Length: 70
Image (tube, rainbow, N blue to C red; front, side, top):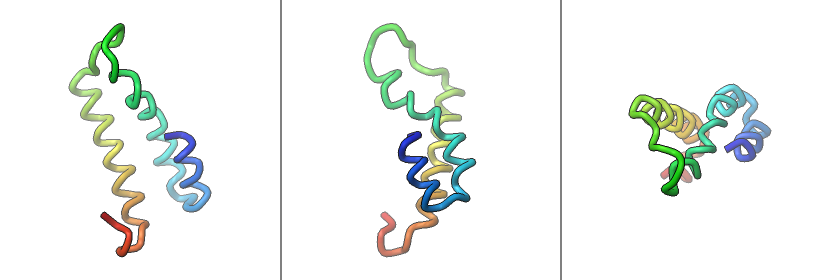
């Protein structure tokens, strides 16, 4: 997320604060994927992370031209 956020901020500096806030989401890509030491996140933590990811997604999606939006 950090590397991707840096690239996005170069193109759209207004996104930098939101992308900095989203940087901790990177650990969700690996932290809970494999069984072992880490327990699943609490429901509140998971809900907050998902809400943050949605805000980032919607903010970036709003900047894209209509012809490339999903």
